Length: 113
Image (cartoon, rainbow, N blue to C red; front, top):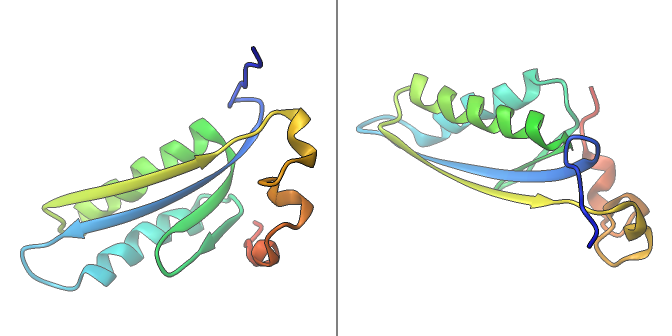
């Protein structure tokens, strides 16, 4: 069995926060979460439905936790956080889902710090 050590491999992590407020604008709270990502110094891409980052898994999960906390700090009563993780072994360079091969035309959109 192939074992992947996320601490030694780059992954893609996409996440979405859905804050619930008693009053106010949800988009302003989501912007606080996005600001956490921007300050984290990792490559990222903000999309309409989620933000995608690339890097070491544990670091990216910490960023998601900080983004979720930013929602609470901005007045959210609760936050739903959806996370998707794409990882691969070194042997995966010829597979369909290998983003670094240019399978998706949006790869150039990652903001590199």
